[in-house]
Image: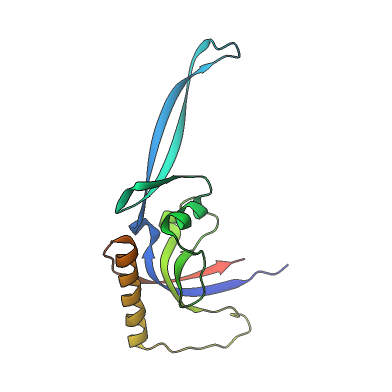
Length: 155
């Protein structure tokens, strides 16, 4: 059995900057098989996701990762240099806090055996930051200041 570790350097913002969630509780009385009230009550919670600037466009939570990417209209784990959604933790229920919307500038697939050392110029990083900022402003109408995230996918 082997474990793969893939470090990524992504320039972007947490998805919670673009998507919000709202939980609503509904309480109802439980009835028996004949339809008679039992006097017991049950509460069910429903989580609704919506874009920050479009509260009309909502989705109910079912497959949380899929709902976030669908609402944002993004591809999960795009290739380096492409704008998309980058999950940083696959064992979470909160992709709004652990998801990153942005561009992966470096992915090191062969950490164990590779000796890849890459140099990125300051201008390249600033260029990607400006591209991410402009894309988010255009697509979602939100002003953001992109950050640099370093994380590792473990599989």
